[in-house]
Image (tube, one colour):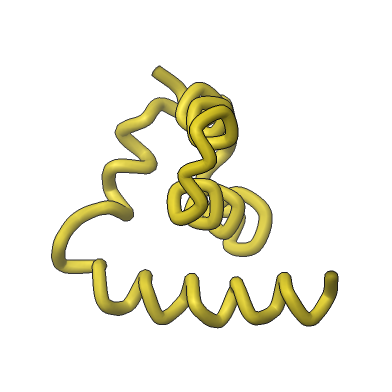
Length: 68
């Protein structure tokens, strides 16, 4: 599967956290592309990145809310 497949599934099922993570990595950080394999996404889902990634996502969510 590609990241695009995961993103589309997240949108269909309203998995807000996954949508936020993918948008953050694709559009804000530009570390992955939608056509990349899911392995690229799995890298950021590792337990060792959990706390730092949650902090990034909270800030990104606040930014999205402010910008509308």
